[in-house]
Amino acid sequence: MPYLQGNRGGYRALPARDHARTARGAHAHDPGGVCKMTQLGLVVSLDRCMDTRGCMGACKQENNVDLGAFWVRTYTSTTGGFPDAETYFIPVMCQHCRKPSCVPACPEQAIRKREDGIVVIDTAPCAACGGKECMDACPYGAISYNERDNTVGKCDMCAARVDQGLAPACAFACNSNAWMFGDVDDPESGISQVLAAMGDNVHQLKPETGNEPSCYYLLSSKRWQDMDGLRAR
Image (tube, rainbow, N blue to C red):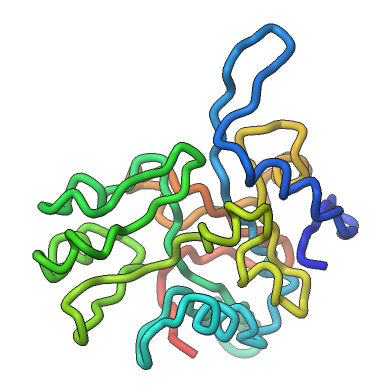
């Protein structure tokens, strides 16, 4: 199963209903009647990622991604030198930021953030622009140009699956159980418990940009390099 709950000692599978319940609604209500907003996010354990590329294949198949384009792509990060070099693999996709720089950059207002925190592109207005502004605005290189219809595309966290109470295809397909999906703003969710348990071993890509990504990476066995020196696989 792709749902993980864990601590420094390991992980165990979470039931799908833990995430399906979150995915079906944009907000939850506490007993006092206060509306709590949802921020869906992803966690990837780089200690577990074996670069099987199951996430890449599942993403392409689920979203019919064009040949040569990738909505999630695995990179290699190597730290240190011989004989102490360390290598880990890191999938990079849209980070579904709380403050996505691509949204205000789009002159056609084709990019929006849903109430559940997922950032999506509406392709109809996008065709009038061609994608230059949003691609330049994304610090993660997560937006791909589609030459066929002059639009752009990116990971939308499999919003159609999420709306059905399902996990994104990348998380569902991972043979290494490296991916987790859920509400990062709900302290009782499995994903939040993992982040709390892992402490200083939780990392984010380019936090200095101020985009506040909702995707997190777990790495305890090697030194974190962020996006410095990444090599495409």
